[in-house]
Image (cartoon, rainbow, N blue to C red; front, side, top):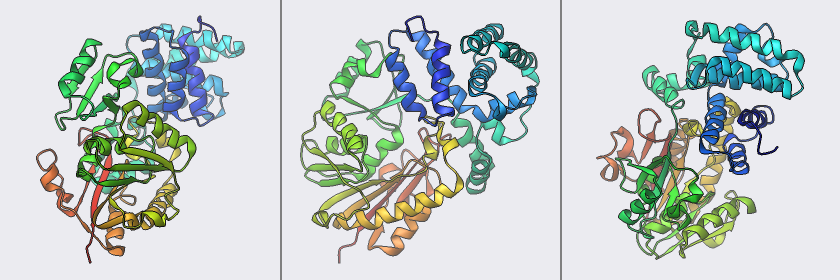
Length: 444
């Protein structure tokens, strides 16, 4: 592609990678934005919003296309299918783009992609949708919230309809960039001053002094505070894991599934140059991501190594003051940031992941010294992976739940904190969906 590439061409190519070839949306979109840095901020914003919105609303968009098209979405050629999808998103949700322009650009794009004979079809479907969009009625909550029906049923059963509706609606809201301050690297005022000098709009989280929300910046990597390691991209819910761990100066901590390293770096920051955090993950690639963050932040009390969490490490037995087990999970709590998750996960995956978590917990609990803590966390809102595994663990290993109420009661009203865990729910709490459980190894 050349500098004359139309932003809609980029959107189409990215969507084909995500929706036809199963690429991860956040990775492929980031690659495209990095490749086309020369485009102005408005064009890059259009690309991001159109890609993210089309993926977020995919179930609803496909319902609309099927309603107005004689040829169903699944029977269409991939290029035409995704031209229609991105165009329907613009018609329904992007007021700044006139419907006529959306239709015209879609027709041109079909022609440029060698589908001259389908221009009339594309034009007819989109103009029909445009004319009738005000009369659209959603048949059920799956289409309304663009969530697979089995997830709607599961959350309605587990949390009740009102809470389930709030969760699902939250996934369709615009996600903001949340960062955590590395307080041992620079003071808050110094960090705020650096961000404001670069015209970044900064908002306090209202829940944690360490967490800020950033808006109106161009590239994160261009921010001085990021380059110097003063800040780490991390959602409030993820940052609360480090608070729940509550490391003491001099502690030895092991993070067993740590890529890309945000939680481990938080522990190193809280240790204020003392102790050691050993952060592990399965592959050289993942450990490379961790090392990049360590190098940027410049902490000396953290090291990264390749290690499979399912493989016992006898040298670590009874050594750790804190073991952080942020385990592989379904990711259902972060679908607002990674919307393609909802199209990848099937009900049977929840059982498989819950079983994998139990295997990992069975191994890594041996690393906790008597009196030490195991912090078990996930970024999901599935009870099998969370509450049920917490209960299973307490039944099978010599640990007791740590009362979290004293630490968090002024910030959250969650009944289970006295039982050692809290389930954060998007739409109910001001963060991603996250589970945090803290268990202490009994001293015999």
